[in-house]
Length: 159
Image (cartoon, rainbow, N blue to C red; front, side, top):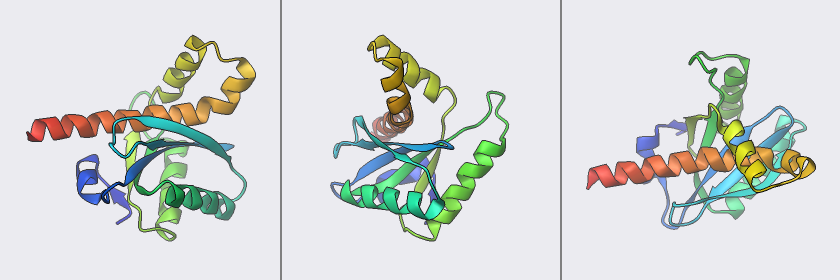
């Protein structure tokens, strides 16, 4: 199973498994990982992009090390809801990852995630240089936290 819906995620998570969040940029891949209780997103060091083979290998090593059961990947939809070249690139990345892993991927609307992440870093008084180093992983944490909050709401609604 390569692409799943957020509602399918609880059945896909192995006992003690975690979720990862990805913010796929042109130069870096921002990464965040949940705690085992699926409550909080924690940023991890970003992966510098080179070639797909290298990027995929670095990502798979990290996902295995962190006991990840599913991946939430930000889908950079335009503000008007349309899909542009960045969405196509994200979908292509997932299609290529399908060939390398059984882990399910869940697309998550990431509109304004980078803006929110930058605002949070500014509020913490993080220097411009450090913000540049952390923005993608902070955006990945924002994406993942949104998905974790949605899963919590689904669990609550189910009773």
